Image (cartoon, rainbow, N blue to C red; front, side):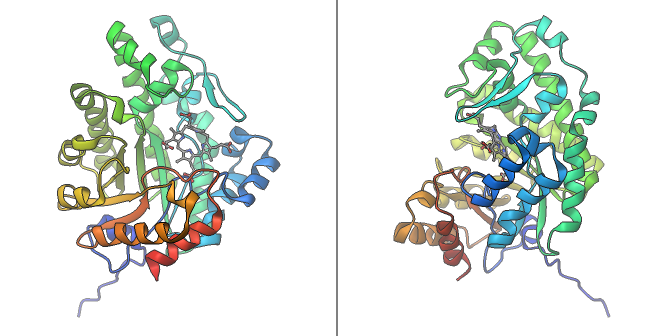
Length: 347
Ligand code: 1CP
């Protein structure tokens, strides 16, 4: 008689296309500034980057939201901007403002970056954090690794900081497409190598964050979002047939359909600019959908948080679904509102 061993990891089941009675749940930025225990560990590390590169403390902050809430997945604690740093860009964080990087806008600047193959020395502590987590996590918790998508990472490398409209990156795309394409190509190669090492270290799922995909025109979206995502997914799946991949082309709007059809991801993460009903109708028949509670509800809380959480669960109940927010939880969200959201999902 054959015995069927069912995977206890609900996130993996959803990523395999299973419709579950209660959706598994995790939150973008679940380890972060809204948690007092995170602030304490960050203070112990000294600053944000020292925290990212300290495997013991990065493991600790990754585990904090799992201990407090029992999320179904843990996401590696790191940042998308470590890849530019590993390529040779200067990176620092200005407290209260955000990241700053040396800028890449000319062929000469490109010459200062190292080859993609050289990123591992800088990123070795991140791989150690992944290895730590494989033994530290509860058996039912899935470990998610991640990287920024080439376009999103390029927007920071070109501007040297976060920008509301990614104007410097759009300008370089128009004014010097040779340098722009060379940068995109370098980041794409580095991203593949970085994610491959995370998978070898024990990440079961990897997520590609294209946080600024929404500012690409339709044509640019095909070339600079869809095409590099296809390259990353194709190479990783050839090398690691069992790995699951979540794509997050944030702000893609109607282009979410093209993305889902063309990129062989196991799950597409949706933001709040598309309705849950639209995503359920147009994306969920093709793949698992992750999302998409409005993260600002975790700041305001109350009955509206509960009713909206239930509405999202209801909208996606006909197919594979991982409950998440449309974007990251913000530092001003009271931690007890997360418990309220979880009660509304799990009953
Ligand atoms: O002050 C602090 O302690 C730093 C705040 C912080 C944190 C907690 C930053 C700076 N990064 C992170 C961790 C982080 N970043 C994680 C792992 C933790 C988790 O999710 O629980 C992940 C997955 C990211 C990814 C990330 N970093 C993205 C993509 C997702 C998104 O939010 O759209 C982006 C765009 C970044 C860049 C970045 N890092 C940090 C900030 C403040 C920013 C945004 C900068 C800007 O554009 O203004």
